[in-house]
Length: 67
Image 1: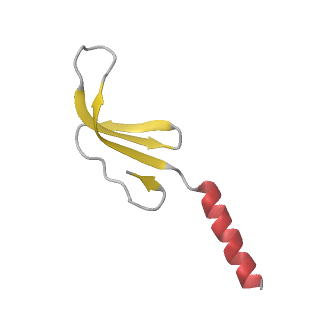
Image 2 (image 1 turned 180 degrees about the horizontal axis):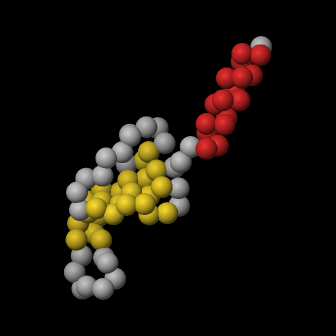
């Protein structure tokens, strides 16, 4: 019983601290200054853009990553 409760506690604490990651690939990116766009990739962590790149962005492809 104690082992089950300990495992449940660990699982719940992991879910509470896990980051939600969304990777958007092959998207048109507008920098706000030029009239042109570039095709690239955008990585969003929780609710903020964490990386913009014209090359593929590696992710851990876990269950918490949406591609």
